[in-house]
Length: 113
Length: 114
Image (cartoon, rainbow over all chains, first blue to last red; front, side, top):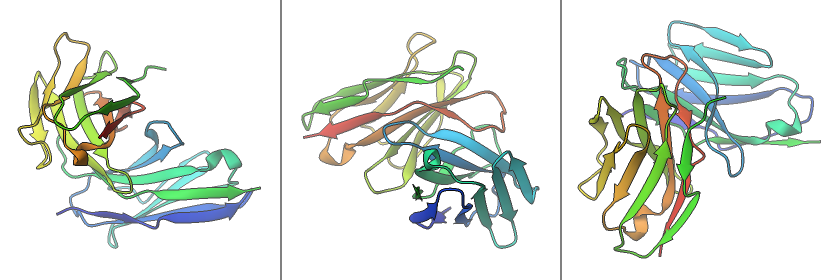
């Protein structure tokens, strides 16, 4: 079945860039997402990329997609302490409107002052 | 900004009891979902709901589970006879028709079965 994998932890210094990586298995993925979860909060959509794109930039966030290797990354420029959270990679398992999401385990980002 | 509201935020129940988790999706959204996250595990899809019926459900969503949209605003998940392994964070989400922007999630209900 479909699977999404992420590394579990990342620690960076404030002001540095963070890169969170994700791999997926579903070759029919249409959209890939990055969600952020702060302690005690819900799942907040950060950004998404359509599968026919290679890159998407949104302010401090850059998403890179290598469809051949089924590899997705999220780069956060100038990482701040407020970016400390769990970051989830997710992909849609079908192209229809139903759009069930398949999730990674989440990468816990710790930003040190 | 519109949000998805879930109640309660935390529910403790005894094994074998029925629980109802409640969600108020965003008013102009048409697709509704329940996901769950067992501690230390991945977020798992449970069920999707569209046009007043289930459009897809996972293997987890067995006869113990049911969903309902009783009044056009609430979206509920009922677990008929809870088991210890049902302890998890349950997330409700809603989505606009055909939106590429993904879902809007609620803050979740932490269900603890004792």
